[in-house]
Length: 268
Length: 247
Image 1 (cartoon, helix red, strand yellow):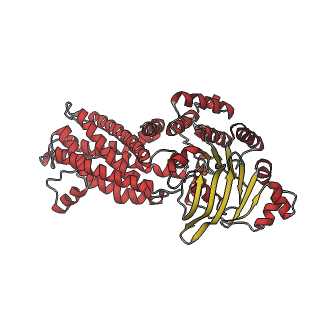
Image 2 (cartoon, helix red, strand yellow):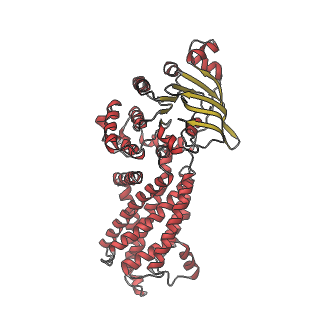
Image 3 (cartoon, chains in turn green, blue):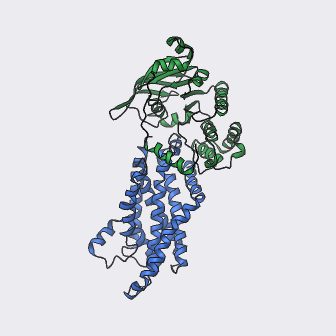
């Protein structure tokens, strides 16, 4: 009866006087790869946080897999996997332990869990490093591990918030290949954000562009290009959102990360 | 249940793996034992107070537990800053299970730390009752539970470490110095006695003394009852604050 994975209607999120998400509505069909694009500070991450139960919306109706992220949190939480924009692994634990932790929290039975962990770690080519502490991993390895982790409980929706940030073309390519494959084989719905427009153009079946908290347009990559009479999605994007560079205030977290990187002398 | 266990296990693994932290947090109690224990020992004895190391050791054990417990609780800020908290918050697990697992893990670590301080104290001359040691360890766990829960509750309110110095100077240090860990409350001025009465650590120190060296100003039953009530209260407030966390 319902072939929608995500339904958003009149969603508003305010932080004090600031309206981060301003009355947006959109739908994502089951089994589709959907790109949610926009400049920095447009409201992408806020929307993802609301969909994934981390933030309460100010108003509006939302459904994830037919369930409400406000009143049916556990049902929603079980149904999606997520790769966050910022790293979210426990660096003091090994690759295996990070996945084991996740599997136990999601109540995946032990035998199934162990089997899937092996499968997934082999796919992301980290099986040989399974007993290494995550602290010793490069940015690409961490990302791969996070992807494996997000899929461990077999979610029906996979959220990826700027998953390819800081990855080299090889890793990026491999990652998308895997995600596309999964989408085809398991009909898993993929919802992702990115700043790489050629990536969105290549991967996404449907796109919504958000700016200043409002959705300005929606459609397939071809529709958006035709609409703006441009050749690439990047040009279409710039035409729609303007050339002005957005300032995003650095939070305390960013400062701390910078300091940590300075001290440890390595980049993520 | 499994979720609580895996959260507990995670805290323990992190503790065992950071050797520097383990060793580092033993420096302070050792300093108190050696400098104060040997420095004030002779005067304490002359004034008729008896063996100062025996008096001091339970206080320093309580201090070791207090510091480790509060830090374990406050570690939540790290998880928040380095993203791991998000991973736990999107999982289909109740907020109460998360905070309970974390708190039990932190409390276990703090108890282990307390036991290590006790062994150090024995090495410098502390002579506790052997028979009551198992009960004393349970009591140490109770102290640890209260202060880990307190640390977690505070951490739920903070977004970064900016307020950390404030917590150290205006909460942790006063809790320790005003608890009667270093001096007998019986001869202290009244205002200090009153302050010690509202300091939860006083009941921890007093209970440890009752169990390990047979001296007590409040009585063991009072100590246990007060600590249990405070722990339940702190856990309840902590879970509420934790459930309000938005990232």
